[in-house]
Length: 440
Image (cartoon, rainbow, N blue to C red; front, top):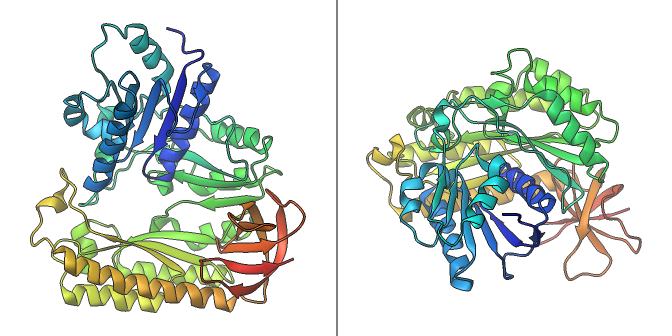
């Protein structure tokens, strides 16, 4: 069945990789003649790009899938992505869902939809899920054009070989698979023609890029991207500490387009907890990485993810984490309360920490993060920074918002239109709503 004239909506849950894959599916549907609509509008096809990182993420995925059928009983509801991959048995029992498409099958979305909708009168639920643990092929998806022209997420790698004790992702995404460098460069070059200036290089375990290619590494790829004249900014997704070496930082510091924003995937500041998590580094490793980054860049933004209330985390272990985070003085922390994820080793670990303790520990670190963020931004008041303007500020005439290379969120007054322009500004004042006020 031809999809020409059909209406489709896509909802995205989860990480930057999911956002990239949604952008690719959006393009595939438009090319097939499908009209893309807001998820709140009536549609013939309703796709949820699901997340499986926590039980809560799976619950939210189910809620979004059910919402579509309530609005329109005839809509074709499609579950794609990580939850579709690891939860296909559970989802297959759900009569609200018509199609289940796992990872490494999203590239076949149009063919699957055409086949299913062509047989719609007699079609039963269809499951398109492969055994991803044994699939060595990188799923070839491409983004030709974006709804937003300023920043683009570029997926260069899929899969993970780490098997952290709390994480289901290696089962949802399979082993490490890297995208060919020429494909990445071609996609980025094309997107610059549509106005994109900043590119966020991302993957499930992005620092593993090239391990399966044999002759290329992530820093090699970044250097080639930096040679594209129209690329004004290169930003990295979450980094494993092993990527941070003197040689890598020497090479990064020579790239004019590189944004000195390092999101270190830390998870805990206590060595005994890191060991139970099966993380492959120590707090001393992190301490040294922060030091060498600051030796190479004047004001790098160091951010991280932290899990509180991991199984067995004692008050003493949490206090170790708190002290360590005070010491390394990060710009911002994303704090998560540990959530049991069925199918992982941590789900069976004892004792599990109660929710009140998790909430208390989370609040302590969130307050610290707020203070560190203010201190980092205060040090830079009066400095001149380049800001990539992304959009008009909602509810305020003539105000625009964007980010510095360090990812400081800036608000700027201008009577001239500034969208997608890089402007030099002086940082003036920290505002209560999370922005730093600047002036040209």
